Amino acid sequence: MEITCNRCHQAVPAGSCYCPVCGLPQLVYSAENAAGQDQPDKWNEMVRDAGSIDWKPALRYASALAIPAGVLCSLLSPLNILALLVMAATGAWVVALYMRNRRPSWLTLGAGARIGLVTGILGGWTAAAASGVALYAARYWFHSGKIFDDFWNTLVNQQMAQQWASMGIDAQTITLTRSWMLSPEGRAGGVLCALSFLVAALMVFAVAGAALSARILARTRRPQS
Image 1: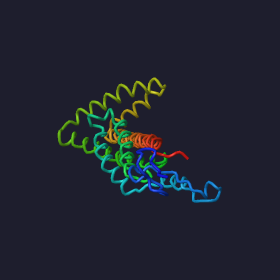
Image 2: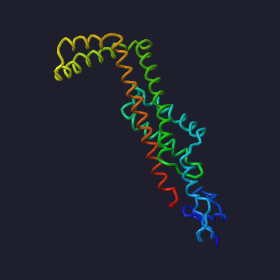
Image 3: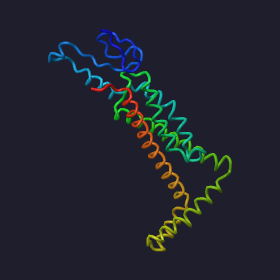
Image 4: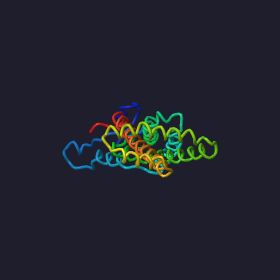
């Protein structure tokens, strides 16, 4: 009797574990299995394959998408306000591209999260590097340092000082902390903290986007046990 694929309805050769057209894994039953005799557990084999990652194409897709996304997510980018959504979409896109030609054509949640982590690392550090270059260029090449200095002075002298006072911190501690934060070391520390937070947030959202993409695609492509 001819076997057809449940998804594309094309003919599947007898005994084949995958559809030759769309790659959907097929459940193969034999008379020995129906009689209660042992045979290799093809389902477990497919689950193990779905949990493994071929890192060569995964890194290729991650690099191709995460590096441009990291530039778009830098601190001075016009799309910075959407940085987290951009990185989540990038992680999901990398997983979708990786699964396009994969056999079996689905991934476990953990495998998708690992691809998202690599995507987030590449994108996050690219965003940090692009932010550093942009800040350096703005200050020393375009002589726009006064804009950043005024913003930092306002932030420290007004907003932060008011918050510290409302928390019950004594005036001497506020004065010393404010003096340090207005020093060159304090400014550098503030930028470093902002970049560290950006990298961490981008990594988290890339992992979440990639894991969600793997979960959604697995529901549509994974055969039922």
